[in-house]
Image 1 (spheres, one colour):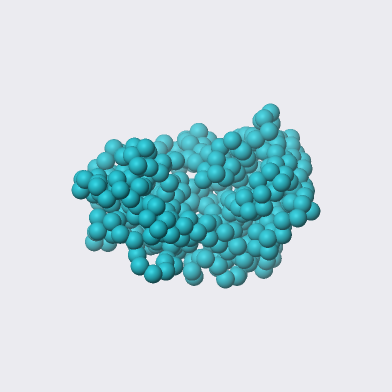
Image 2 (tube, rainbow over the protein chains, first blue to last red):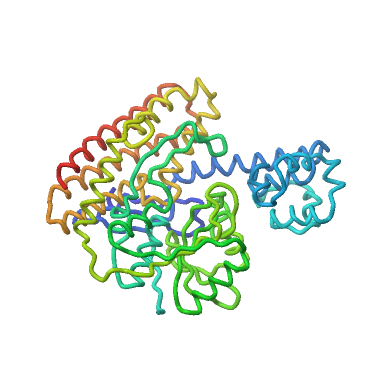
Amino acid sequence: MKKADVPQEESMLEGHQRACYALDEQGRYVVVGSIGWEVEKVVNSQANDEVRQAIAAALARVRSGSMSPLGYHMARRQMDAAMLSAYSGISRLRVRWHLRPGPFARLAPALLQRYAEALYLSVDELRRVPEGEVHERL
Amino acid sequence: MSGFEHRHAAHCESGTVASLLRHQGLDLSEPMVFGIGGGLFFLHLSFVKMGGIPLTSYRDAPRIIIKNMEKRLGVRWRQQRYRSAETAMRSLDGFLAQGQPVGLQTGIYWLSYFPIDMRFHFNGHNIIAYGKQGEDYLVSDPVLETAVTCLAGDLRRARFAKGPFAPRGLTYYPELVPADPDLKAAARDAIRQTARRMTGIPVPFFGVRGIRTLANKLEHWPEKLGTEQARARVSSVVRMQEEIGTGGAGFRFMYAAFLQEAADLLKTPALGDAARDLTATGDRWRDFAVQGALLVKNKRDDSATYAKLANLLRECADREQEIFTRLKSIV
C-alpha cells in the first residue's frame, strides 16, 4: 500500500486516527494516520448492529414480562450469563434463574448489589428498564 | 525517570513494548519490535468459538512479543498480577510515584476514552500508564495518536475485566534492558522462526495451511450456516484483519516494514525483495477485505461471491508460502 492509497474515509473512529503502514515516494515504509476506511466501518457496523439487536430483543422481552430487567442490562453490557457470572461471582445457573422476573423481584439486597457492581450500575438502575425507544448502545 | 514520550502505533502490544523499551534507552521501531517479537502468524480454529464465531487471528498469541524480547534481546521483565483491585491500584500508584511507566493489560470495553462503537469485550489490550492527574491516570494508548487521561474507575474496571484472557491486573515493565543487544542475530532468529511457523506446522489450522482451511470452510458457509450467519463470519474475519489495529492487511504491511529494516541491518537485499513481495500480498489481503465488506454491505450471498473470496485467500496462502519458504533460505 502506498501512502496516497491509505484510506481517509468517514468511520466509527470519531476523529481519532489509526496508524497504518504504507510506502512513501522512495518505497520506504512509514506510519500514516488514517481517519477511517469504509471497509472497517461496514464490518464494525455489522458487529454493533448485532449488539443493538440483542439489546432491543432483551428490552422487548422485559417489557412483555417474560424476562427480568437483569436480562436487559446484561445485553446492554454485551454480556451473556457466563460472563456476568464471571463478573459477579454468582454461578451461571443462578444468573439464569435470576433472568426470570419472579426470582429477580425477590432478590436479596446483597445479591442485587453484586449484580449492580458487576454491571457498573446503581441498584436503582438495575431494577428497571428505560422508557420509550432506546437508541444508545450503553 | 520521567519525560515519557507517547508514540502512535498500529498495534497495542508492539506499540507498548517499543515505548517501554525506548523509555529505558533502547530505541527500536514498532515494526522491529513486532518482527523480533515474532508477532506475525495466521490461525483459524473452527472449534474454538467466541460468541459463536470461530477464532481467526493474523498474529501469534497475546504476550508473545513480550516473551520474545526476553528470549532474543535479553530484556528482563518484571511482571505482576494481583488478587485485588485495591492492591493493584495502590501498587500502580507506587510505580508512578517512582517515575516508572508500566504496561498494563486491560479490557477495552471499560475504557471510555474509546469511541463507543469500538468498545467490545476484548481483554488483551495493552496500554501504558505513565503518570497521574489528580485521581486519574495519564495513559499512553499506543493505538491512539495522542496520550489521554483515563478515569481511575475506568482503569480499575479495565484491569480487572473478567472472562477470556482476564488480565487480573497484569502490570509489567523492563527491569533490565541491554544497552547494545545483538539485533542482527535476533532478527535472523525471529525471521527463521516466523517462517517455520507460517509454513511448517503440520496441522491445518496454522500458518498458510490455516489460510487454506479458512478458504475451504468459507466457501461452504452459506449452505452450511445460512446467509445471515455466513455474513457475520466473513465480517468477523475482516474485522480481525483490519479493524483491531494491525497497521493494515492483518499485520502484513508492518511485517514487510520489519523486513525492510532487517534488509538494511543485515545488509541482505534479498530481504528487501521479500518485503516488496509481502507488500504485494498485503494488497491482496486488502482486496479480500474490500470484497468481504461488499458482501456484508450489499448482502450479496451468491456462491460465486464466496468462491471469489476463497480464491483470494488461496492466492494469499500461495504467495505467503513462497515468501516464507524463501525467507528460510535467505537468513
